[in-house]
Image 1 (cartoon, rainbow over the protein chains, first blue to last red):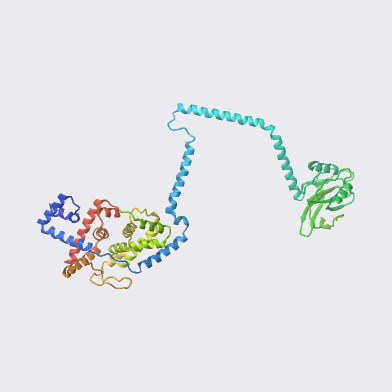
Image 2 (image 1 turned 30 degrees about the vertical axis):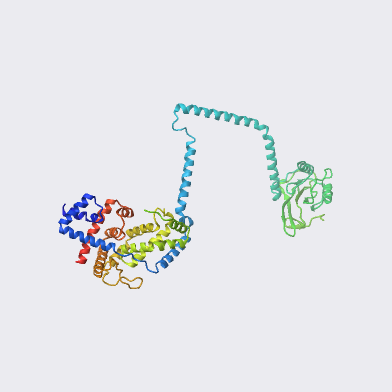
Amino acid sequence: MKCSECRENLSVYIDGELPEAEQHDIALHVRDCPDCAAVLERMRRAVHALSCMPQEAPPPDFMVRLNERLDAEDLRRSRRPWFFLNWPYLLPGAATIAVACLAIVLVSRFMEIPLPDSTPQQVLPRISQQQDKLASGNAKVKAELKSAPAVMPQAEAERKNLVASQKEQLRASQPETRPAPAASATKDTASAMKKTGGAATPGSFEWRGSTSGIQEPTAVAIYDEEAWAKLWQRHAPEIPAPKIDFNRFMALAVFQGLESQERCCVKITGIIKETKKIRVFFGFDETASEKGSGPFSSFHIKLIKKSAAPVVFMESGEEKQPVGTR
Amino acid sequence: MNGPDGNERQLVERARTGDRQAFTQLVQESSGRIYSLAFRLCGNRPDADDLSQEAFLQAYRTLGSFRQDCAFSSWVYRITVNLWKNSVRYEKRRLFSRHVSLDEPGETDRGRSEPLPVPDCGPDPAEQLERESDFRAAARALDSLGKKDKIMLVLSDIEQKSYNEIAELLQCPLGTVRSRLSRARENLRQAFEKITG
């Protein structure tokens, strides 16, 4: 064995990690080579000295300073969002959710296509069967649609009634802006009664027309049945007074009075309920004027929710106390 | 590599839930081993202090990822080695501290001066004197070596790790461990000869 080869393996020789034959060869070489023996001896001394080094003890305040750093770490952690703090624990859960979502997507896709091992001969009849099913399903739906009209008119009528009712409520809750229909008091009143069967609800009913039995300009608030019957008797004696629940509602009525020249319909344009009084605004609707030379005495009667506050009628900035109120 | 015993496993579990007392107990049981390793790697107390504290701090931060397939101290041991390998500032301080004479009183431990520890290897005063001389020379020789040589000698000859353990710690093949250790010991021998004359 050469010296260079021996010295390359001295470290492993010291540890006894060489194969037995090589271990023996080096032992023989070292016995006969004083230089390699000296190198081996010094290496052993150095390694032995290192192995004798004692364990170093940490300084006495080691734990105190470490605890200070751990406190700082805790503080830093508490200021971090929770998902940063717990990411080692959250990671498996997040991965599981992601895999589950992916699996659902893949399964839902694969459910729609034929199995990979299906041949075209196997698949085509299957598709044909599905098409038959679809065709029969469509036929069933079509048959249902054909039978539907028998049911539909009733549903359609209910829907129309509902829409009409909503429109009435909306119109009553806001100042009237539409042109007033030029109709007779009898016709209007009969129409309202027909709708309700004699009962009235607030906001949903009003009576307007161009002919009234009340010949003088009148603005009145009615709070009870007796006053209502008297007013109606004067207004349209030939028609029974509509029934109104005066426990809940009150009526506001404006009569233009007999007019031969100004043939514009009177109209309640707005109702403002204040804490101490109710302001009722009225005017004349020029867009709803009537041509002719016969008697013209327009009126507008409206129901509102009953209130104890006094009513003040106002026309073009003037305030009028109601006539014939309680 | 042996896993943690039942008591240590319980301490780790408690520490994971935020029990600082449990973590402190784990640190106390392994601080001597970790600090000693850090001291041998760094060659001076301030750096050893920084390195070992950093290792425990990192263990505290990443306790959730500790699989408990080895003892807690072995896990922190590996953290310490990795930190030392990856740290550049420790290398800079090492270059500075290399010139500290071992014949002078030891480096101060936070202001407190104390002599370097001497191993108690035998009762014979003459032999003890010789070994003390060898120990100082070996320490100086070790301190003069490069980073790669030093880690091999510290793990193999001071920490008495087997080739397999070193390979696992440094994550390198067994053959690389043998060749690196051979080179490191040869460099140690040469440095040792220069010092001892």
